[in-house]
Image 1 (cartoon, rainbow, N blue to C red):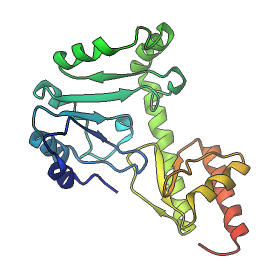
Image 2 (tube, rainbow, N blue to C red; image 1 turned 60 degrees about the vertical axis):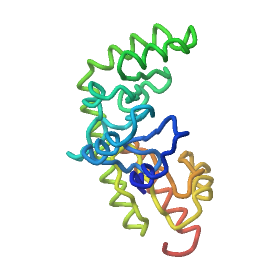
Image 3 (cartoon, rainbow, N blue to C red; image 1 turned 90 degrees about the vertical axis):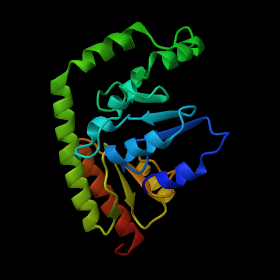
Image 4 (cartoon, one colour; image 1 turned 90 degrees about the horizontal axis):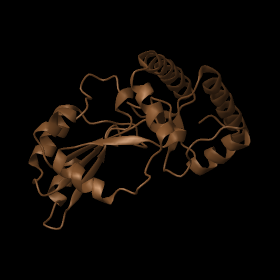
Length: 225
């Protein structure tokens, strides 16, 4: 469930204008190592804009998974996207940012709506950047929750894909829409519009409630999955 970079490179034609890669990826949670992604970007013609969405990059703990920001200084066709909606916890304020060379930013600013964000969101984002303790606590909660959910879901016979994010992509061997509906009846909302179940890692209480709900669903099925 990773990007096929060789296949993407071969698919580039004279009509290709932009390539968008989410790393770590949503909804699979998988991520490409820096060296592999850098080599791919270097092969792409300068006329094509390459956008790397790093919304979940702060959650990655694998040493090979790194931000592509260093490349921005040398690549004038590269844009890095970041958000305050994930690890910073400001999803309700709908604020994020992009990093690229000045020429690209100048073009983008010509197309921005007049009121694309607001003062409260900007001030909250500035404060969030300096809140290192919040980041540390969030990472610890996510680390603990990922470990717990992975262990418990595997005990149920589910397959868990390696995740570098704050969610798990889980093959329950059941229909994802069915799982979503059954969990919603129990007060839990997960994404059920993918092939597999995408489950956000929550607090200790929320994670335990999820495992209890999955146990009930398995009992309801009347079989061991």
